[in-house]
Amino acid sequence: MKFVAARAALAVALSTGLAAGGVLLGAAPAIAKDKEAPKGGSYSKEFVAAAAPLQKVIQDIQAAKAKGTPDAQIKAGLGDAAAKMTTVEAAVKTGQDRFTVGNWAVVLGGVLQDNGMRARGIKNMIDSGMVEADKLPTFNGYLGSFAYSAKDYQGAIEPLTKAVQGNVADDAVAEMLADSYTQLGKPAEGIAALKVAYDTRKAAKGAIPDGWYTRGKIIAYKAKLGPQAIEWATLEVAEHPNPLNWLGAGQLTREFGNFGKEESLDLGRLFLRSGAFDNDKQYVAREFIEYVQAADPRRLPGETVKVIELGLSKGALEQSDMFVSDSLTQAKGRIAADKASLVGLEKDARAAADGKLAVATADAYLSYDNPAKAEELYQLALTKGGTIDKDRALTRLGIAQFDQDKYEAAKASFAQVTGVRAPLARLFSVLAADKAKP
Image 1 (cartoon, rainbow, N blue to C red):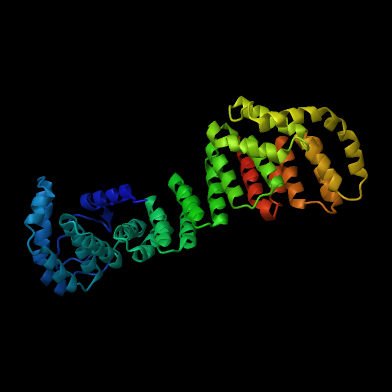
Image 2: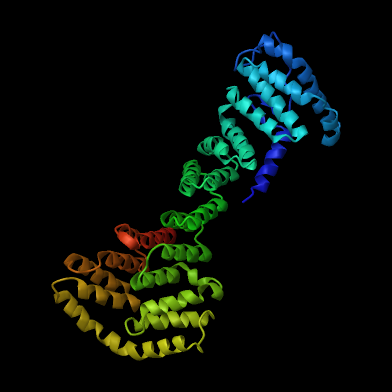
């Protein structure tokens, strides 16, 4: 990202004036020997002696601007103004001196199109101690922006960090900070800095710009920082739970999650319940196929039929596809016998010494949209214990509770999931929280 808009906004602000310490950037404060500034002390004798020629230049610039004189024409008549600036800067003794010369450097640097001088001016104003506290984040943002624009990424980090920590209003500042770290080969630090901006903005109850989520995901994905990529996708879908974000969050979680068949099955269930399958067919066709493969017509025939028929209705699956047609035929042929076996399986599961059969039977009930019975049997399996996959049972217990609108119970179940399933469980918890909203 080149942050063109941010730089344009910066240029406008610096050329038209920004309130700071009671003085406008762009306004030339008059120097009076007998008056003291409210902060920073009075003007020094040395500064007063050196400043008059430069103050005249600044006042002339402002008068010309007020008349609408083009900057190119003003610039042509400046002569040795830059040298005068150097002389006056060398005479600075007090905070008031530094604030004023900084102000002038911003004005003169704008006309000369000298970003180095403008940056120097902003730095002097900050260092003067006269910039009001609530304006400091903005000023540090400007200072960091100048460094960033000059590709001085190391120099940009300190002021941009201060701006972010102060919850600067300019959304681009946080992205410039993250990108500065990335340009220096420190993507993890960049993502961490962006998270500081996110947390600070959240604490202030401010809106999070969409670009922050995108920036976080891109940096993490390119750097193969799986946990961070998943975190930003999860944060995004919590804020904007639309079908495309659900699809992307699930896919990123799988990308870095080392999923097996069972995890892929529950990812398909997340897509089904979140509306991720409501995206254009070109984005979800493969997801329907993977869901069918994970469900398996021989193992969960009822769910397989449901998923295939949904895919066909959306145009994401084609009846002419041999895999689709064979899976559908095979699944339909098994449903009756499979359903008939459930009563006996449940009886055996209750009598078993461990919870393994209870999990398998609960899986079947969940696949036939009987979440109440599934919840009961998952709870039984967790109580019995034994050689069960506890994280799998907890994930599906949460899904069964979700399907009954027991959202708080579902979130409690998902919160207990650990290991490879934990990021998937967090997504389910986000979905439960969204559904629980009034």
